[in-house]
Image (cartoon, rainbow, N blue to C red):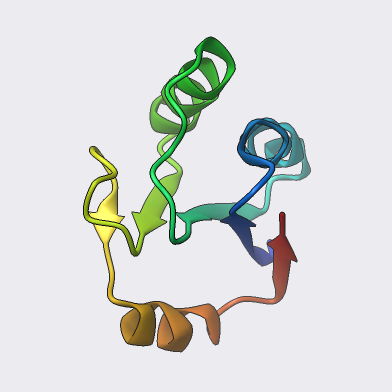
Length: 90
């Protein structure tokens, strides 16, 4: 049975995004949450975000400056996190 996993992206953005893509081999449902900060515009992050989009993973953020991600207020985000089996914070 597939588990629902949330990956919370904060300080180590490159590592968190890369790991989000990597754990998809487990056939679980992976959703990515970019919290509080704007995603850094660098080659590594852009490549991983492109892969996340291609794999049709959900991308959420509580920062309106992050393009191409579904915005959720911090309160909405907290409620949504209750739906997950595992939450990985980076």
